[in-house]
Image (cartoon, rainbow, N blue to C red; front, side, top):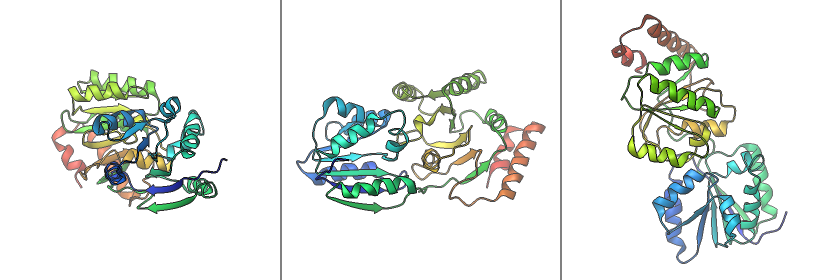
Amino acid sequence: MTSFNSELLILTSPPASGKTFWIKSFKNSLGSQDLLVISPLRALAEECKSNWGDDISIMTPEEWLNKKKSFDVVVFDEFHLFYYWGDTFRPLMWEAFYGIAQRAELVILMTATFSTEMLKKVKLFECHFHSLQWINHGNQILRYKPTFYLKAPNPSWLLKQIELEPKKDGVKLIFCKFRNEVFRLEKELMNLGYSCISCVGGESKEMAKKLSHDPNPDFIVCTTVLSHGVNLPVIKRIYFLYEVCEIDFWIQMVARGGRRGESFEVFALEKPMGINWNPIKNYCWVFLLGLKRNLRLDPLLRHFFISK
């Protein structure tokens, strides 16, 4: 690996802890120095461009490779994705990283979720940068935890629960594993009379336009494309229709709720990670909610069954 003269700073901080605000404040302290933010998420990059204007340059790794413009200070946002995506289907992410690191005076890596294995790899950079510092405000933790977490027995149980959601009662976010599942569920929910918006990879701009016309749909159905960064309406409830294996992604996805400190609930297929959870109480809730469905109880009793 090439040796760099730049300094490397690693910043880990929980989701919704103000990293965007930190970047803007940091820019003000730089004075005339140029600042570039590299985001592996095109949707987040576009959103920041519209919010920040020309004060801060922001690009995806691939966009930087097309321009190869040098900047004094470069922030790599959601850096854990360089390992998840750069090591697989987006190898140009790493090409951009090494190209930028050879030109910048200061490189900052920001993320809320760094696995132990990733941190070991990042610390290997120490012998290639002039210096390396790690500021850890919290790694792989949730700043705002759900007020209620239920581990469902299977996806079918969750789908039945989703069909009981009252209309116009807050935005519910549903994570699906595959694109075709997103479109199929969106169609089924709309046939049931719900307002619904979908989003899969490459369609974040279209989703943003739909949200501008309907800012509080009953459901937003998506893949992991909405698991990071992008601003969403206040989310009342999150559904996972598949088991999430990586703690990094699980934390990012759960963190779509509570962005402003509001209460939210999670219905998932795996036990919670880092959240107090009682399997006996969970079983009782599964039984009660299933009983409500089987007996076709009045929707007005829903509040009684899920209130904590």
